[in-house]
Image (tube, rainbow, N blue to C red; front, side, top):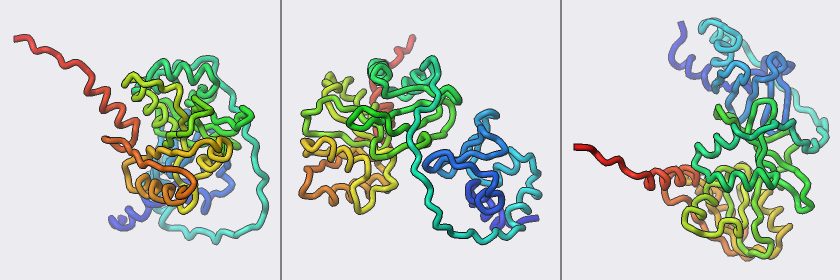
Length: 307
């Protein structure tokens, strides 16, 4: 039998760490922080989670993987994790060539993507607009939503993936975060609205449309996460300010959580003397997609009781 402390320790080991230490030959790098296993090509590992798409199962820990994928019994899986000593990882100075972004194979239709975004409250017209402009696609393999970012020469350089049926998200192979998903409605506009993710960006545009404002005339940028938002300006925002030097005002619409609040403070300090920065988090909810759902729920007509 294992103690509660031993079980907790085993559950703390994520699948990436387990494979990196015990089965490095079974780990295949795809892009950014996205990996797959050699044994199962449809098993994707990203952001501390794993999802076996072909079987519709997933989890967080290596213990979940061993029991759900390897069909091990609990004691056997525990022994596999607790009973072995990981090898010492050797540090190598090998230079890894930089990958070039290549558009993944795309689906002939986008109905899953449109349905997914509409369920998140995003306006149908805005979705259609982005699809018509080549900003949103649907992949052929797992029917993920693909948010594409372009450079100033209109060349695709970045792709953010979101599953339409699970919590998987990651970057497409060869993605360059400097050119993350954005909407440039007016190249002469001196203001940009900045978000952590593409769905939050589209949610804010939807809110503007709901208020009768001209959402198409605004500039929007997704940072594709805030992992690099420390004491420096995030790469996507830095690139945007270089490409569009007329932009002098930045509205930060980052999440209402400790990382989002910390990033807003850091970015504001980094841009001091360069831009006027306004910290405008969502009035309610964790992010602007949460806030959009809250606002839409308020607009639903109440059912009249029959007496």
